[in-house]
Length: 156
Image (cartoon, rainbow, N blue to C red; front, side):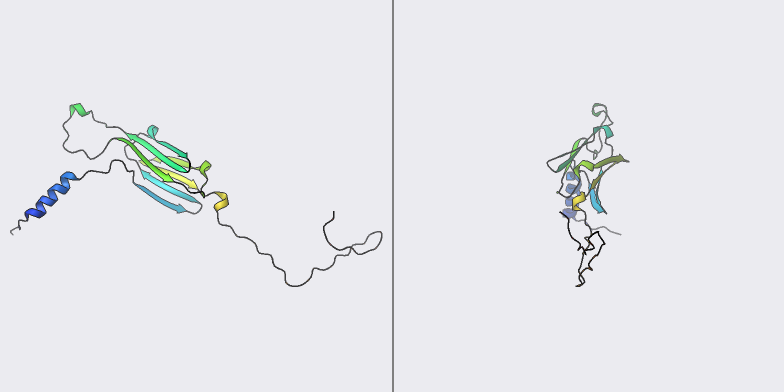
């Protein structure tokens, strides 16, 4: 079976492979809400857990981490190098509806999991509705030394 020669397609494929560089500064993240908490799961493979820094300032949550090369660069001849090294950072802007003082961070199997609780005052809640059926409340009669009926009210 003969293959068709297409120089433009071949050149395009060559340049896309040569110029393809991994995104070195972005940490891939999933973010979702599960009941009364927001969960952020950030991929950080190969990161030393002691280098992870999570802080909140002015409602901006910042995650920083560092990955070092396991191979001494001076002794090897790289054939391909796609796993970047250096400092990574990711920032999230948090709204007023989260409890900043209760954020938790756990690192396991190369994934940092941030648990961000919804603030108590921002949680949905049911409000009981009182209603009057149109009837007046019965008068309460208590016997007293004067045998006078007393009506309910606020005593002052």
